[in-house]
Every structure is written in structure tokens, then in C-alpha cells.
Amino acid sequence: MVFGKKDLVGKIDMSLCYNVDTFTQKILIKLMVKSEDSQFWWVAGQFLYNKFIGYGRPAIAVRFEQMNADNAYNNKDVTYNRASIFLNYFIKGYSAWLAVGVDQVWYTNGAEDYLLTKGKQRNMTDFSTYFQFRF
Image 1 (spheres, rainbow, N blue to C red):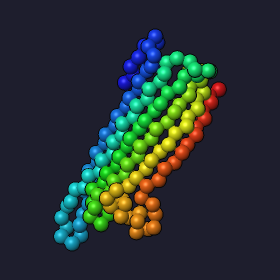
Image 2 (image 1 turned 180 degrees about the vertical axis):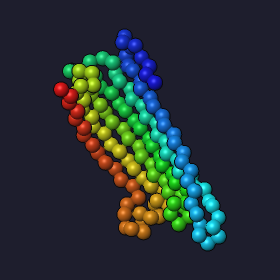
Image 3 (image 1 turned 180 degrees about the horizontal axis):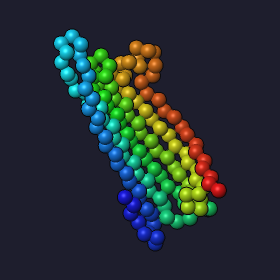
């Protein structure tokens, strides 16, 4: 969805995705069939300031995503979460673009247990800089 007109101060872009997969797994002991679900979803949005500051237009973008798999590790659900926030600066439309942002990833339930048994961290933070130029 895109909202906004040329004469407005800003434009908002939003997107949403949700996906569920069910797979069947055979348990050899009793040859019974058990279904497990896996879900993945994300929501993202951006606010573009529709006035030039210097050579381009600034924007702020946010995103949250989550993946969940039932009974994936030691009969516990595995959950992955990710949150991001970026400051974007668009020059000449989308032909040139600079971005600076941060991603926070954290694992819970069975994923956390697995990482801790392997001596790994259950969360991490990444800082990113991105440049894109199209000719």
C-alpha cells in the first residue's frame, strides 16, 4: 500500500506477509503420522519525508519478522525474532540511496536452548551501512 500525494509532507509504505506450512513426519515406533506447523510472518513500513533536504529525501524504515517451528528441538518450539530500523536517504528517486541501520535478532524456546548448548549467544545486534547506485 502506498499513501500520499505529491503535495503532502510525507508518504507511508507498508507491507505484510504471513505464511504457514504444515508438514507430516512419520514416527517409526508406532508408524503414526504427526503434523507439525511452521509459521513465518513479517511487517514492514517506511515513512518518506517528501521534501528535499540537501540533494535527496530522508526516510525512516522499520521491520519486524518472526519464524516459529513446532517441536523442532527437544519437543520445544523454535522461535526466531528480528527487528530492524533504518534511516534511508534517497537521491534522484531510487537511483541512488544511502542507508544506515540496526538489526536485533533474538531466539527463544528451543532455539535458545540449542544455541546455549553449543556455547553461542541467543541474541545479536548488527549495525549496517548500505549504498546503492544505479546507472
